[in-house]
Each structure stands twice: as C-alpha cells, then as structure tokens.
Amino acid sequence: MTNPDERLLAWALLSRAALASPDTVRTLLAAHGPLGAAERITAEGVHSRFGPQTRVMAENDLERADRVGARLLTRDDPGWPLALADLDTIDASTPIALWTRGPAQLNVLTEQAVAIVGARASTPYGEKVSRYVGMDLAAQGWTIVSGGAFGIDATAHAAALEAGQPTVAVLPCGLHRRFPQGNAGLLAEVEKTGLLVSEYPPGVEPNRNLFLGRNRIVAALATGIVVCESGIRSGTANTVRWGNKLRRPVMAVPGPVDSAASSGCHQFIRTGHARLVTNAHDVLDLLKH
Image (cartoon, rainbow, N blue to C red; front, side, top):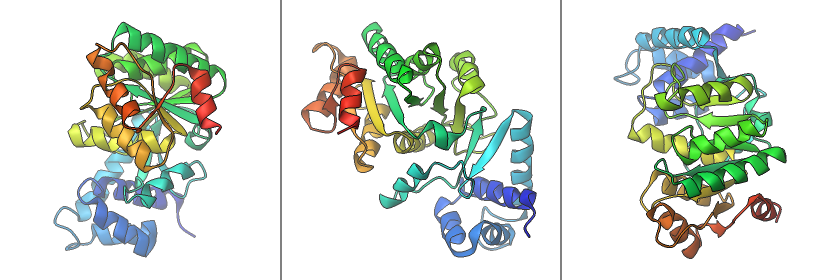
C-alpha cells in the first residue's frame, strides 16, 4: 500500500516540475501514474531542469503551503472538479494539480458556478452591474468565480460575500500571498468561507503568462461566463475565447455606447461571441436553455 504522504509528495513534485516542462510532466503522468512519473522526474537526464532537487523543492512547497493553511488538491482526490477535464478536449491541458486555501470543497462550489469577469480599470457603471448581478446569482445558490483582480473581479467577489455566499478566486501566482496586495483584505474574506485557488506552487510570483493560464481555469470551472466591462484587447477577451472553446455560455452586459470600458462587451455581442444580458434573470434563463 502506498504511503499517502508519499503520494501527495509525488503530486507536489509534478506540480513543481510542470513549471519547467508541462508537456513532459503530462506525458510521464499518463504513462506511469503520479508515483512513477515523480520517480522519473527526480532521475538524472529526463529534462535539464528536473532532477533530485525537484523533490527538495516539492517538500518545501508542501511545508510552505502548510504554514499558510493551503492544501494540494490532486486529480485523484474526490474533491477534484470534473469540469476541468473539458480542458483536455480542446488541447488546453487540465492542471496537474491545484493548490487551495479555504474551508470549502471546490467540486461542491463549482457544481453550479458563474464566472463574472471584466476590466480592472472598471467604471462605477460596471461595478454597479457586477454587484447586482453577482449578489442576485449568489442569493440563488450560484457560486461566483473570478480572478481576484481589481475592478470587476473584486466587485463580483464582494457581491457574493455581501449575499452571504462563498466565492472562488483563481489567482495567477502561488498561494503564499494574496494577490494583488491591494485586494489582500478582500481575499482574506474570500478565504474564510470559500476558496483561493492556484495551479502554481507556493513561491511562484505572477507574470503575464500565468495570468493567461489562470483565465482558462476560471472559464473551465464555470457553468457560464458573464462579462460586465471589457476593452477590446484585454485579459477578459482571453477568458471569453476560453469560454467559447469550452462551449460554456458566454454573456456580456452592454454599456454606454461611448464608453471604452464597454467596447469589448459590444464587440463580443456583435460578433456572436457572447449573448446580451442585463441582469441575473437573463443569465439564468440562458444557462437553463
């Protein structure tokens, strides 16, 4: 029988190694399982950035996670969200594992979940819309998923908390910190009843590629995606593309015709990449049909 700690260490090692070569890790995992893949990764010669030091780094990751109250959620855990497997159907790669902070179970929270996303440089209009849509959805038992960022993300998380419901924030860095720092207080509140989630081990700092990788997880965890404000070229547009690829219902709230903050929403609607919604009733109507 396998020691549970040994198996968890193997998954932590795979999570760490995936930073260097995710494709190699996925190939080894598919061929040999977590223990066999971990054994090969720690051997010399498999990859220039793998080796015995990877095990030491994984041990440090688990210790650091324990210090901040984080845990490693693995694919063979009953709490793993099955919806993430949809990423493999579009060659987008299901995360090797997820690190979480908070008391909730991710698979339970995402049984019916809506991602509310949008501009970091949001306007009062966008914040008002995301607040009432988020509150109404949360009050009806839908989990709000977002990225923990400034602007629309933060407003959506706060709306769920105001409705007395847990929410999920997917972060673009390790869970050794609550990022961005300006939202640390809000994310601490999220962590009390919901979850902070990341595919990156503790100690990994945010960068542009990690932001984009985070977006695919937000889209995959959600039953549907609502954009409250967005420019045409933005991280939100990247989340919309993931939603379309995953065949998730993507919706957008229109804004003032002269507002650059809503130009992306208008384009998504005009090109058929999103359906027009104005309130939670519209969102639920589209999700149920």
